[in-house]
Length: 449
Image 1 (tube, rainbow, N blue to C red):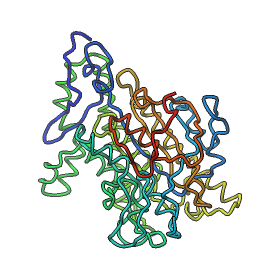
Image 2: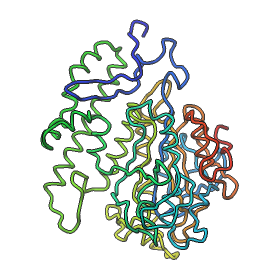
Image 3: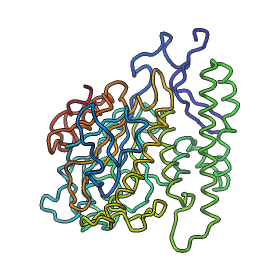
Image 4: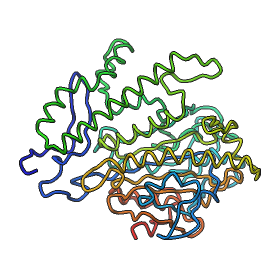
């Protein structure tokens, strides 16, 4: 590759006001090959939130350490087992009532990434804490186009009460920029795509939505000349990687366009659906996970959150034969048929997460893959939805953290170890040094050995 010109990491394809980031190519690496993460692939962090807890016995592996087997709920992760670290014993103590009475769902979401006890209010005087993703974004966000990315599949207001006197802002957000400012998530795949690849100034100057839609659908056409010029400069491996990347961008564009057509053409008087959001949950989850994957691949952001549903969500899952609402079922009272339905939901959501991880693992980058250079937490601040426990949390850490996380293990920590100790340890591996986050008591041990 010595005859190949070297490219800076932050290279964009441009044309007609469009800007498209690129994945890490061999031509962007130092001349002596792979180097430290600072000069090659960046480290990334993401937090995927599941509401209403899980069926803990089916979630938790039965053995500790490296000699472990996937539990029934985690079976869809078999292809990426060697990239996982399941953690037991962690707690989010500030999600407990502490004298505030009911409202565990609101506290679960608000405390999940902050470790702070939210003020019980249904008014404008909301207050939680700064979430771990925003601590990272404040320090490293300037290195990427987007400091952070907040995703979801259910919209929700930030005003009014949603859970026993708690503001809806608590149940509908896990990302908090300041203790009184939640970061609202984006649930429309098309708008996420525009955030990642659009030129905001040009879009805002366009005269009509039709013009914007036309522009967005043709983003690859707009940058095609620049892509052709770049391809001529690359070696065979990089040309193939560039072509695969552009193909994946085109596929996402086409899927978003199809979803928009289906949503506008099919009348659904029995429910209200936001425009341009897929009617089918399967496609909605796939699109959002694919957009998150491509955001990491192109280094458009290194920090993200994804709420698979709002906390307390009562969504049903007819596609897997679960007709009752999730929240309703979570108060299962040990009824066998309710528990069976919850197991189906738990495994269904994990299956989408598994597909996302496989996509990252199959995306080469530097001396490894995008998954090797990521730290992705999946979990909740409620363990058993029936008991509303906030300890023994279902927490899964995926990815190698650029060689700083030892995977393929089930690690059991002492009871009620603060979840925020994990977050402090992740911030360290992002190059973000802070002394305290929420109720943290120190760094989490046994992550790299």
